[in-house]
Image (cartoon, rainbow, N blue to C red; front, side):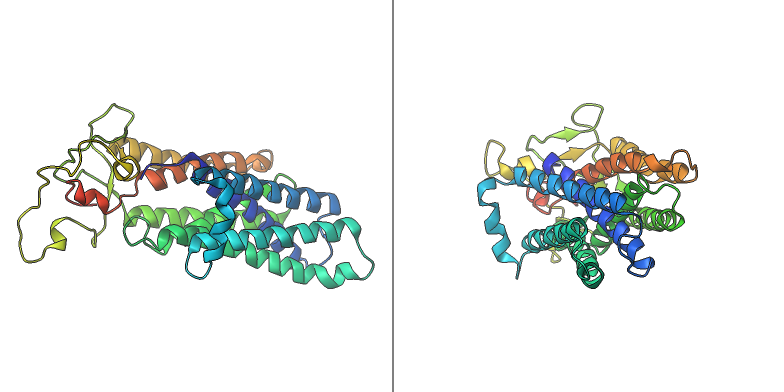
Length: 334
């Protein structure tokens, strides 16, 4: 799949903002629902930063739409569309988080202690729903085996929470509970990402090649081997025709020029390039933040390499995904 910068920025930045809000609220709940236990200034700055990240992410996501002015129409299909559910829950999160900020700002006598726990729980739940819905947009697609796994929504939840928990250390680098929260989510995110890559390793190219000119991301020029994530239950051209064991081969395409399908779904990435990027993701998103967490002098900056690594991970998440439409253009397996 061709990676889209707007979607990459949206999923990473909004995930970090949602994770930051969750880390802040969880810390509040551990303190037995006290009123802004970390101090009003820190609470306000952290929650406002989370809102800004989510808004930047939502704004960038509209750039991926053909008609951004009609983005509101996407909210009407929440009964059947995970994309619509993501938009609805994101608006719900924004409304609840803004309500928390207003509650802190105006501090109505007697109402803060009454409303803050309920608003906090509702905000926490809505943030979880946004992250889960974002992951399910891809996990529900049977036509892309690399995405069609429960590890995708679970990974979105874990990576969003990990980056957000690391961001909270910008304000609370010495808080033991905040540090423990960051460690737990970072380890869980690394574990889930590792399981996903074990499930879909980088394989050698399948026999057969498409006659359609395709974009290539290899680092070594066009035409070299591509990364093909497959599994034991992978899809192939011959598996759809059990009556014969002959290999299906494309003789001629139905058109002479590229089209939307070849532009979006025939994106190729070099095998060695994919391996190098996976290693870079491990170093930036997980290993380097873990080392920085171990150092009191650097843990407040641990979110920076993590977010940079997640940007690479999200680019690779799209670049390695292979749609079944590739079988129509002559490839033997996906």
